[in-house]
Length: 169
Length: 169
DNA sequence: CAGCGATGTGATACAATATAACAAGTCCGA
DNA sequence: TCGGACTTGTTATATTGTATCACATCGCTG
Ligand SMILES: [Zn+2]
Ligand SMILES: [Zn+2]
Ligand SMILES: [Zn+2]
Ligand SMILES: [Zn+2]
Image (spheres, each protein chain N blue to C red):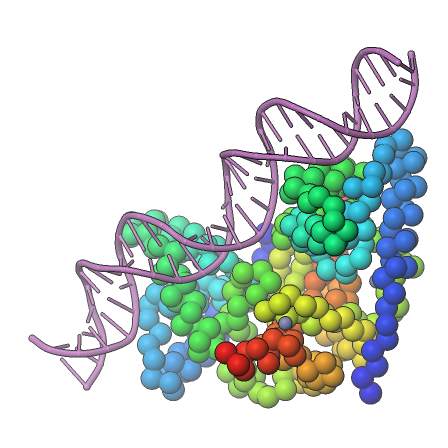
């Protein structure tokens, strides 16, 4: 699995954590250390992670520090919390989770759609918000009275890096 | 405004099957009925299918005809054959399989996107084509030089029927 | 300190993916 | 038509991944 290298991840992580803190402060709920560590793992990767990806990553870190291991349910509890407060997304078709990377103001605007570009080769993900796309989806869905449960779409393909590798291969 | 052109899958399927027959003839291997039916299911979908997706689809068809059910291993054997001869691809990152669809004379008209509205309750699927949606996706993908392998989107939600049932609770 | 939300712990449920082992059927050339 | 290789059927099971339950304990906060 290749990580994105063309920008500073620490910036992404800091921003995600800062947004989350703001959201939780406003709502009067607690962004505990454990929730924060789960969020940090998600924010540190542009690849949607499974609950067990997160578990393994955190336990690896904890092992190095001589700390006790976490159980799966701890991860699920943190994920549930983060989803409930709109801090992360669950990608249904992949049983995976990803930090919302667009800031709190962009999150719950009516008529907006979240778009994930997912690389089939390396799993990398890019996230965007589009109001016109959201409008189109609403229109199309409305024609058959379909009710999207979340304005999240996934588009599969090849990312820039993997296109290059493809050419060489 | 929202144009939704029909897309005749039979064309896609015929083309894939014809290619496969040519390949097998040249190699002197047998594209049996069962292998062909697995390939047909893959070719009929723009979405990568899991082995069990294929299994369920074929068994659904067979049930309607009063035929016996297939076991998972039959699907895996056909998939193995098709992969070995380069007729389909396995998408590693997702345990899914897709008919090989090489060539610039793609089955999809340029600029069009296929949209699947998938009901989370009953599994019903509705398919649409939208040119303006395709344009938007191209624009978004172009921003990060992402190459959609097929302009296909899946939107999950509740279909009309299941919304009614939901209401009755 | 009391109460409640958060976490630990162990077990378990549930689902998806894949293969093993062997029997039976089918094709095709010798 | 015979034999062997290829193909399929059948049953069972392995393997991994995903998710939740039940209950005990911790620890923050009022
Ligand atoms: Zn980043
Ligand atoms: Zn990639
Ligand atoms: Zn088609
Ligand atoms: Zn439905």
